[in-house]
Length: 237
Image 1 (cartoon, rainbow, N blue to C red):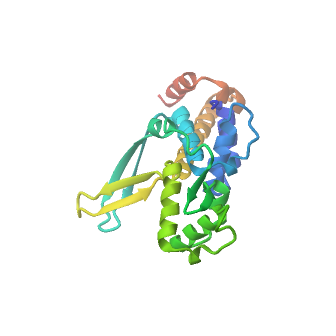
Image 2: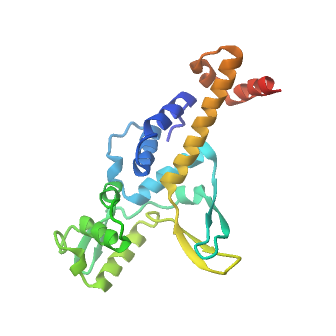
Image 3: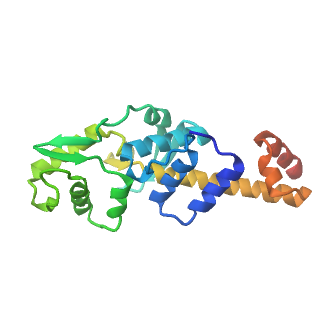
C-alpha cells in the first residue's frame, strides 16, 4: 500500500463521489496499490478486499475504528470499537479460492458477485443467488432453491471458514432491554465516510487559507499538515 498525498486524496474522493458504496471501496484499493497491479480487484474474494480496506484505514486514520448503531428493540444507542490491525493481520483465505462440499466445488464470492445481487430485497433469495453464481461443479447451472437446505447451510459454513473476513460480525447486547443482536460491519461504507470527512476538511482548510493569503490550492495541499495547521491557527486566532 502507498500513502496518497493530499491532492491525490482529494482526487480519490472526487472520483468516487457518485459511485455506489461497493465501487468506492474498490476505487480506494486501486488508488492505494503500490505495485501497479492490473489484477481485477472486483474479482478478489471479499475477505481479501476487506483486508485491503483495513490496511487503507490504518494508513490514513489509525487502528481504532469507532461507531454506533441503534437497538432495533428500544432505540438505545450502542457503541462499538474495532481494531483494524486485527483485520489486516488475519491470514489469507483458502489458497485455492474454492471450497468442496458434498461433491460440489464453489469459488469464494467476489465484489462482482455482490454487485449482481444488490437489487434483491429478500436476503434469503440473495444468498441463494450468490451460491448459484459461485457453483463450479455438480450444481453449476442449477437453481439453488432446489438444493437440500442442509446442503445450502453446509456450503455457506464452508465458505465462511475459508474466507473468515468476508463478513465481519459485530455482536451487541443492549444495556437497556438486554436484546442480543449481530450486525455486519460495512467496511467499504464506513471507510468512505471517513474519506469524505477528511476530503471536505481539506477543502475547508484550503478555502480558509486561500481567502486569507491568496495562495493557490496546489501550494496549500503540498504543505505539511503541521505547517498548514499552524497557518490555520494564526488565521483563526
